[in-house]
Image (cartoon, rainbow, N blue to C red):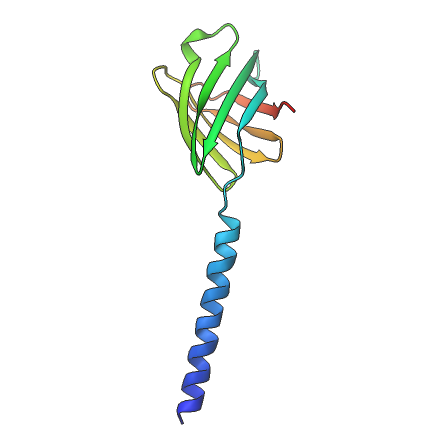
Amino acid sequence: MRLPIILSMLVFLAAGCAASHDFAVLSLPVDVTGVWVGGWSDGANSTAAIIELQQTGSAVTGSSRIFGNSRRSGALQGTIVGDHLSYRGVTADFGAEFTVAGDEMRGYGTASGARGLFRREK
Protein backbone atom coordinates (compact mmCIF):
# COMPACT_ATOMS: atom_id res chain seq x y z
CA MET A 1 0.00 0.00 0.00
CA ARG A 2 2.86 2.39 0.76
CA LEU A 3 4.70 1.69 -2.48
CA PRO A 4 2.19 3.58 -4.74
CA ILE A 5 2.30 6.57 -2.39
CA ILE A 6 6.09 6.59 -2.30
CA LEU A 7 6.32 6.26 -6.09
CA SER A 8 3.79 9.08 -6.53
CA MET A 9 5.82 11.32 -4.23
CA LEU A 10 9.06 10.53 -6.09
CA VAL A 11 7.45 11.35 -9.45
CA PHE A 12 6.07 14.60 -8.03
CA LEU A 13 9.46 15.61 -6.57
CA ALA A 14 11.30 14.72 -9.78
CA ALA A 15 8.88 16.81 -11.83
CA GLY A 16 9.33 19.72 -9.43
CA CYS A 17 13.11 19.52 -9.64
CA ALA A 18 13.01 19.40 -13.43
CA ALA A 19 10.69 22.41 -13.56
CA SER A 20 12.93 24.38 -11.18
CA HIS A 21 16.00 23.57 -13.25
CA ASP A 22 14.32 24.64 -16.51
CA PHE A 23 13.18 27.93 -14.94
CA ALA A 24 16.67 28.70 -13.68
CA VAL A 25 18.14 28.18 -17.15
CA LEU A 26 15.51 30.38 -18.81
CA SER A 27 15.89 33.24 -16.33
CA LEU A 28 19.67 33.74 -16.63
CA PRO A 29 20.35 37.32 -17.72
CA VAL A 30 22.14 38.02 -20.97
CA ASP A 31 25.35 40.06 -20.80
CA VAL A 32 24.85 43.65 -22.01
CA THR A 33 28.29 45.03 -21.07
CA GLY A 34 29.77 47.09 -23.87
CA VAL A 35 29.23 49.99 -26.23
CA TRP A 36 25.93 49.96 -28.13
CA VAL A 37 25.56 52.16 -31.22
CA GLY A 38 22.25 52.94 -32.86
CA GLY A 39 19.47 55.42 -32.60
CA TRP A 40 15.94 56.42 -31.81
CA SER A 41 13.07 57.07 -34.21
CA ASP A 42 9.60 58.44 -33.57
CA GLY A 43 8.48 57.76 -37.15
CA ALA A 44 9.16 61.31 -38.36
CA ASN A 45 12.64 61.96 -36.98
CA SER A 46 15.68 59.80 -36.21
CA THR A 47 18.48 60.57 -33.78
CA ALA A 48 21.82 58.77 -33.42
CA ALA A 49 22.82 57.58 -29.96
CA ILE A 50 25.45 55.62 -28.05
CA ILE A 51 24.75 53.63 -24.90
CA GLU A 52 27.64 52.38 -22.76
CA LEU A 53 26.72 49.65 -20.28
CA GLN A 54 28.43 47.81 -17.45
CA GLN A 55 26.71 44.80 -15.88
CA THR A 56 27.23 43.17 -12.50
CA GLY A 57 24.80 40.30 -12.01
CA SER A 58 21.40 41.74 -12.86
CA ALA A 59 22.40 45.36 -12.09
CA VAL A 60 23.26 47.62 -15.02
CA THR A 61 24.94 51.04 -14.93
CA GLY A 62 26.37 53.26 -17.62
CA SER A 63 25.52 56.24 -19.77
CA SER A 64 23.41 57.21 -22.71
CA ARG A 65 24.36 59.91 -25.20
CA ILE A 66 21.70 61.04 -27.64
CA PHE A 67 23.26 63.39 -30.17
CA GLY A 68 21.48 66.75 -30.16
CA ASN A 69 19.42 66.01 -27.03
CA SER A 70 21.33 66.64 -23.80
CA ARG A 71 18.08 66.51 -21.75
CA ARG A 72 17.84 62.78 -22.45
CA SER A 73 21.54 62.00 -22.04
CA GLY A 74 23.56 61.11 -18.97
CA ALA A 75 24.21 58.44 -16.39
CA LEU A 76 21.79 55.54 -16.17
CA GLN A 77 21.01 52.60 -13.93
CA GLY A 78 18.78 49.63 -14.45
CA THR A 79 18.31 45.89 -14.37
CA ILE A 80 18.36 42.96 -16.71
CA VAL A 81 16.07 39.98 -16.22
CA GLY A 82 16.51 37.23 -18.79
CA ASP A 83 16.69 39.12 -22.09
CA HIS A 84 14.80 42.21 -20.86
CA LEU A 85 16.83 45.36 -20.10
CA SER A 86 15.16 48.24 -18.31
CA TYR A 87 16.95 51.45 -17.31
CA ARG A 88 16.28 55.01 -16.14
CA GLY A 89 18.35 58.17 -16.13
CA VAL A 90 20.02 58.94 -12.82
CA THR A 91 19.64 62.74 -13.03
CA ALA A 92 17.83 63.29 -16.35
CA ASP A 93 14.37 62.35 -17.62
CA PHE A 94 15.00 59.36 -19.85
CA GLY A 95 14.75 55.61 -19.78
CA ALA A 96 14.25 52.60 -21.99
CA GLU A 97 12.89 49.08 -22.17
CA PHE A 98 14.79 46.70 -24.46
CA THR A 99 14.73 43.10 -25.54
CA VAL A 100 18.29 41.86 -26.12
CA ALA A 101 19.18 39.20 -28.68
CA GLY A 102 22.92 38.60 -28.97
CA ASP A 103 24.56 41.83 -30.11
CA GLU A 104 21.29 43.61 -30.92
CA MET A 105 18.70 45.23 -28.72
CA ARG A 106 15.34 46.70 -29.68
CA GLY A 107 12.82 48.57 -27.62
CA TYR A 108 11.36 51.93 -26.81
CA GLY A 109 12.20 55.05 -24.83
CA THR A 110 9.97 55.34 -21.80
CA ALA A 111 10.06 59.17 -21.75
CA SER A 112 9.65 59.71 -25.49
CA GLY A 113 7.94 56.59 -26.83
CA ALA A 114 10.51 56.53 -29.66
CA ARG A 115 11.65 53.15 -30.98
CA GLY A 116 15.29 52.23 -30.47
CA LEU A 117 17.57 49.83 -32.30
CA PHE A 118 21.16 49.32 -31.11
CA ARG A 119 24.03 47.00 -32.01
CA ARG A 120 26.99 46.23 -29.77
CA GLU A 121 30.37 47.32 -31.13
CA LYS A 122 33.01 44.59 -31.27
